[in-house]
Image 1 (cartoon, rainbow, N blue to C red):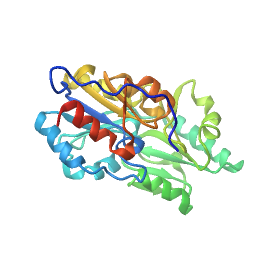
Image 2 (spheres, rainbow, N blue to C red):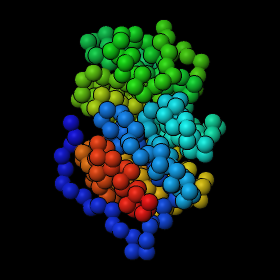
Image 3 (cartoon, rainbow, N blue to C red):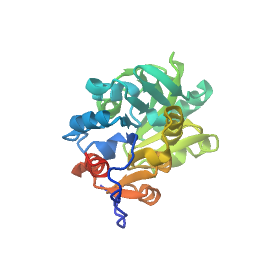
Image 4 (cartoon, helix red, strand yellow):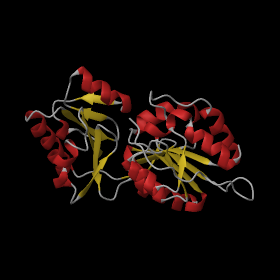
Length: 284
């Protein structure tokens, strides 16, 4: 159910013509994709027009890199993927940056989830490595939720013993995560980020990792300013990313804190808000 909020300012028209945007970064779920997780009509045409203009388009998501790469396979050349909430950034198959967790932290998180589950909580951990995601829970309902966001995943007996660089641990709770799992992870918040990334998802990452940190690093490497950057988001894991762009947009129906932090409001994800806003601001 979308959040209600007071109207925010729509993006102003540029008095000198199309805005000088060099980088467009968008969250996926609740932002670019509609509520049925579908790519919006017109995306591929918009990406072709952006490429003609020399504008880089970058998906920034809590989804894994393999999932994003599959979704954009036909247009992936030169595209930067900000995956796993900024903990893993890849361009043309080459890692640009990553921020792995210490193995001891991964063990503590998995053990915490095991204890919560033993106490009756209906949740499971997704240990997110660079090569794959790893889960211990095997029921069909949980695996169906995992497979929405992780096209490359494996069931393992012990998720604390995987041979991979773990960049994030995501927890899926069938209940409202802000009321259930997130408070149970308060002990990790002193040293790590505990980020609610959806109604049922919470992610634990290094304190230095977020979409905004990844975006700022990318801006420096490409010589692109925040004034030349357009960003779209809808949930709490998008906040730092919105702070890194002058052209920051909260989707209609976004979390109230996202609406507060963004400079502008875009139409909802179900109304093709990202593409409509890009077309208007850049005069495509």
